[in-house]
Image 1 (spheres, protein in one colour):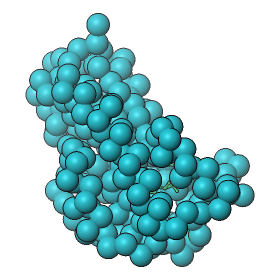
Image 2 (tube, rainbow, N blue to C red; image 1 turned 180 degrees about the horizontal axis):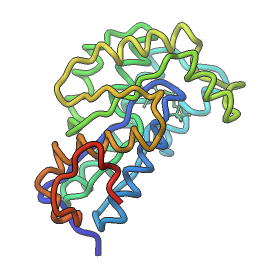
Image 3 (cartoon, rainbow, N blue to C red; image 1 turned 135 degrees about the horizontal axis):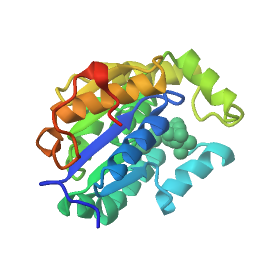
Length: 222
Ligand code: TYD
């Protein structure tokens, strides 16, 4: 039986395409699962009807900015109601690959007001305990996406990704941790653990099988 935390913890990984979010979300989820925590690893857009619609629009031609925004919001409402909120309520660690900051950045890049988008999302979506923003130069991001075979149907152009990155970088909230995504995955993972073990997982060190809080140099903790 996985162990519940004293209260649910929501960790979001954000960044432009090719920033390495999925790798970091997986490393964190695996680390916590190995330590016996109840972990829910998830992503947006989801595989629900609205999430599928925006993904298909990548190939079939894009939706209008308004329709695209509506789909991302509907997808998230369903995700929160059916998965995220129940998991947090039972004390799980929820690790999400993209969340409403992606809406602020990408739909912001398509002309909506980022501050209004954040407010609209916060009306129904729980605020993450920590957001790891993996920052990468859009040109490097596109190179990484192309290298894994995703270049042909890349959703975003370089100027749009540059606007999205600028919006991500303009987020100025204490729970948003900006990390240089050029670092090797293991180094980024160490930073992620360092922040969590000094932040929302601070009181759970013994539950995680750690005698003491490690310093950053000794992470990742194996
Ligand atoms: P996908 O290929 O599913 O994911 P990823 O790029 O994370 O591997 O594509 C998701 C695309 O959707 C990505 O280009 C960012 C975009 N997006 C938004 O525009 N708004 C949002 O709210 C979310 C969650 C994603």
